Figure 1: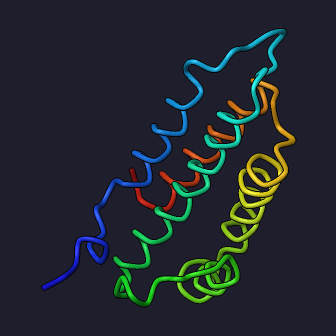
Figure 2: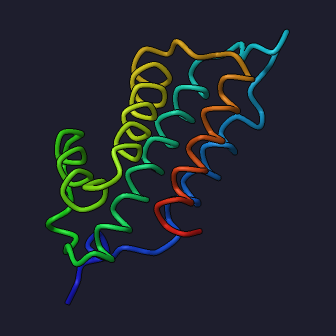
Figure 3: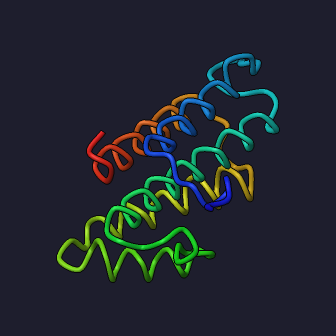
Length: 135
């Protein structure tokens, strides 16, 4: 019997992205800048997880089992190259850009607090997810 953590639910990626947007609903804004970095960083972290969930979803559709899913960013890069972007280098570049924006600048370093930049990053995330999952 599959454990609950081994079961992948289609559509999870967009649910994560919705959760990321919800984290920002009550965040204070002044002059188009989020005043508190904590909810912004949490939102970026959740948006990055949405990207990973989208990749997981398509890898499972391509025949990987949940145990075979990548466990690191390098693993995701390798999986993208092997299974998804063999003939589409643009997909790999989009993943790298989202990794740098969402995970490194937004979450890890907490550098992104402009509401316009956050909205653009989340829109790019949504486009990437829908491109992968067909959603």
